Length: 272
Image (tube, rainbow, N blue to C red; front, side, top):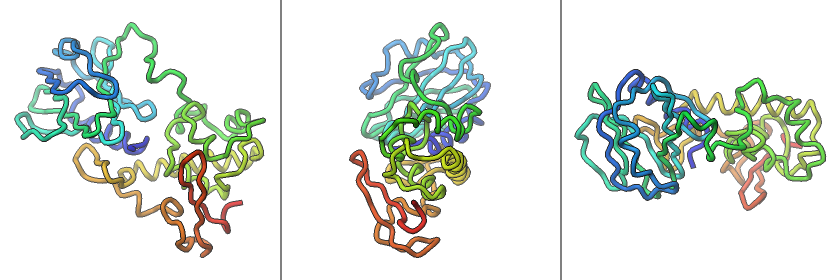
């Protein structure tokens, strides 16, 4: 599933092509996404100018000139592609948004687990974004924040940092890599991690995510950026998917645990 770096990569790829452009025709070919596309979406979008883009967790936001926003969620297999009008259709091309100046935004999603939804300016928040934790690059997110929130928690540390109510964006791959860099085992109880260790972990979460964003996200079978090209952060992974291989730092054999029904690799030499 595309995670925060993949969505940020898409946002950065899309933004230069859409800023300041007005929306023309909107074509919804298949509204049956995980959250169905509303019938009035073309009416709501037509004639509106895109003023800015942003991201909240794994949700891409297009901000319109009337204060409304368009939420795009890539789900597991979604892509938001920048094309020219009239580009040949493929199966699973569900939504087209034509912009002035000869730009076409196309939402493509084979599994239809994503969303293309309006968010009215009259609504202070959207149900999909409610209850989300802070952004990892925000001032709110810190080692002190993680330490205070973790007191008394027996949940595995990896599950704790992957909880979107704690912090957004630390998905399976990035949590595993951040824990490795911080020298902490994924199965350790969250409440038994020290303040200093959480300070290191917060720093490594930001470090890993920033590196992934810079390099275009992690290569996954179904992910591609706005230009259709796959990311390549996978080349930099230390533990994720490397069970049985030698640690690139200490040479120990990478081990695998199953935590919360998810596979989690770690180095028994580097992580305590």
